[in-house]
Image (tube, rainbow, N blue to C red; front, side):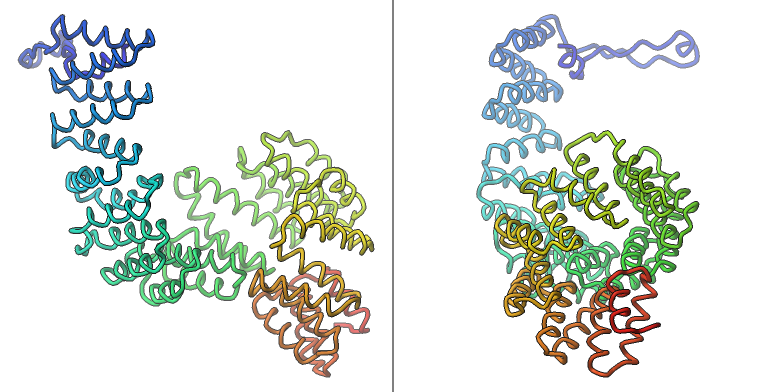
Length: 570
């Protein structure tokens, strides 16, 4: 009741204080347009709603709005109808409101939103054109870019795309608004299943302004949707002075595709051309840390921290800073600088990822010979959700595995895995560590039955057979299946190279392993590549590759076993 009354614009003006009145001439008195009958009508409308008769309340409120043309009363009538789940009544009130005030953006927006909710997409064309026309120039781009979300629930997406494109007709030709308009048209076309049309829209938007962010981001979305020729468009955009968000997005996509060398190049270009783009430094640092380029990672992530700490952090910046502190802690831990590693963690207040922070503290303790204390630290976490409970379990397993407590980790997973694909995979890998190939195969085949498109399961099973020199044709077939499911995966290419080596195809093995190592300079791939080169008589190259791997991770068991077996000292 109070909300409806205070929503009207007919409330009496507040009286000035006596002191203010003495210093200035009081403004002319404006009498309220609310007479006793109108007051009673609004009061009665509210009472009817509270008594459970929204239909009567709506009629009284809408009549009051028509009598006064007051936007607050129209708004209340719409709200009453929506609360009563009467879309047609809400639409009637919104139309009456817009007729009463054709220049009101709020009235038009309300009408537009209700039409879309009611799936009256064709009828929304007029209000949409009005919405664009009424939007001030400095806010029009944002409104245009928001349209795909507004129409996301339309049942006929082709119709929605057509309506939006026609409404944006004038903007599509303007340099100021054209890139955003074509971006929206492209997203609407993509949602309607028209990938080729979406690509055409991205090209048109990019042609209007090669530096515009929207068309480049749309092109990235098309790459993710596997639209042919989308990636060449992204690369064309990046050949010029592209918006940093586009290059950053492309780098993230390359990392997801395990194209790490290309991602590194894009991120170095980004941090050179736009050194003030903080997130570029953070992603570059994360990639460098993953590749064991710890010195470079430390420098990159610190650059991000310096920029992020200089700003008042919002939710996004807070998450970024937490990730940065965790990364810097992990880099310091690799240097065995445990005091510094702990100091970085101490900067994290009220963590968004409490399990991740505690797991890192536990890892630092374990590296100092306090495994049980670290384990107890993780066990003391009180999960706030099912996701955190799962993360807690995985953190314990990772800590035990990293400290070669394979049986304890295996038993912990065995008590909890069920049919969880990730837990089955981890348990299978631990079975291999424990010398239980039969259990490993059983678990991986169970995982394949649950997830027949799980590339890593096929790869792990094929690699295990190849590494033991067993059923090599079957091993090769499994690994080839994995590579079909995940083309270009460096680890799977490594496995294929290894099975070729076991089958005596050394030249092909070397070619595959070179490709894998170039894509991902991982220490285990280095161990395999070095062994194949050694067997081919290319011993200087083998030693060089092994030294690179040793520099990245001197404690890697695969590399150490390889050198010991071949009686090589670096």
